[in-house]
Structure formats: C-alpha cells, structure tokens
Image (cartoon, rainbow, N blue to C red; front, top):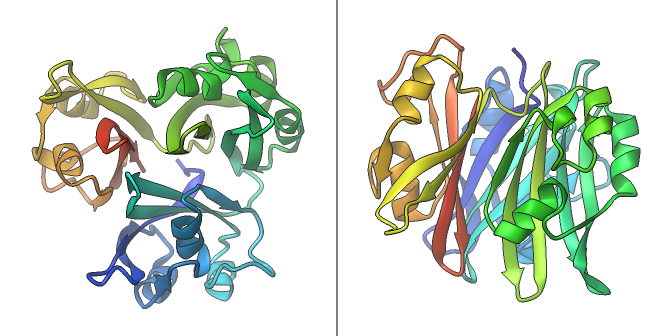
Length: 307
C-alpha cells in the first residue's frame, strides 16, 4: 500500500541554536534525496524549516518553483513536488520542525490542510492553505467552507484543544464535508491543534483516502487525569492485528518506549525498521513518527503516524 506522505523529516536546533539540522527521517525509496538532506542545515528564516521556525506556524508549499525551498532540483529528480512544515514549540522555544513531502501521481489522493481563525472573525475557522493531490473538486469545496468552534473536524479540534481522529468521514455526522469526502474517497481524518498566540488558533488536518492513506496507522495518546500515564485514546487501522495488541492495549509512562521518550523530551522522533525489536508487523509498517502536542509548556497528547 502506498502512503500519501512519501518522506518525513525532523529538523532540530543545533547546539548553538543558530541552525536547524536533520535529526532523522524516513525516506523509503528516496535515498538520494536523503543523502542531500543530511548535508543541509537551515538558518532562521532559511528554507522551509527556517521559515516555519521564524513564523511559528505550519506552512504548505504546493509548488517548489520560485519558492524558498532549497532542495527543489533534488526533489524533482525523485518526483517530490509538495512539502508541509509543522512546528513543535514549547512556549516560545522551538523543539523541532517536521517536514512532510508528497509527490504527484495519478493515484495520489488525500489532503493536508491548515485552518485558522481570522482577525476579523475570531469565532470562525477558514482554510489558509491545503494540498489535495488529485482531489481537485474537494479542494474547491474546502476553500469556500467556513467552520465554527465545535463543528467539523477543525472545529472539534479547536473546541477541545486536542487532536481529534474521525474514522469513516463519509458517514460522519460531525464532518461538515461528509458527502464531498465520500465522493472523493476520503475515509479518515485527524486534526492537530497549534496555539502560538492568544486569540490565534491553527489546526493542521490530515485526510486519508483508502487507496493512498496519509499513514497506515494513526494513534492519539493522551495523559490520564493524574498526568502519570499515556493511554491510547483513539486509533485508525487497529483492527485485529499485532500492533493493536502491543501498542494500544497498554499505558505508557514518561520515558518508557518510543512514545514515552517523546513525552519526556518534548521532541518528535522517527523510529524505523521493527521499532527496536518490539514488533514484526504483517501490515508492512516500516517506520513510526511520534509528535508531541504541547500547549503552554504542557503535553496534551502524542500523535503517532506509522508508515
């Protein structure tokens, strides 16, 4: 199964906090692009990672031509045409920038969106930017859609200030664009909140099509009431397999395993192969990305994508 996201990278500040360097990534068949990326570093405001750092906001680049993306030639050589930068902050301090890269092909269906409230209407979310692969009609519908707090996937993320995952979007009463999603073949969505300034809210929404899902599995882990353990609050792709039994039927302490270490450090991580010997998975999952969701210096969730 092909995934919508082709390459995922984590860029972190160097020891001097003057540049971002590659911490790790998952590149699949794009090993030549990996070699070039390993040689790069990005200053504040430089390249996509540096622009995300300086703006403090998620950014989508749907076209690398005439942009500040610094690896355009290398990306085009391997068919990568779009990039999304997602920041992880703890207060005013940058912990990391996650970069997702996608590529255009005939079967490339899915979407990544950025929603935010507008200065002239703080009670309503509007689409800032989105990448939809081949889903042109769904893109047109989304541009004209406005969403209130508690309505639709972005609005639910806004109201709860936590990641939200909705399966079977085409039949969901909570998803405002359900009919359009069903026609487009979009089945699952996950939204992640990002608060950077008082009164300003952003939600990054990942929409999965069955043929090319955003990831083969997605999970949302949240702390218990005592803030001592994480438990799996929701998951996609968890039916009747070994991953569900190992990852989703347990609680995780701070510092324990992959997800607990992300809670401890506040830094996202990517683990490839068989997750340090924990698992041999029949679904063909080769990498796990764990993203901390931090609000006012406190962890509110860990979101995992498995590719």
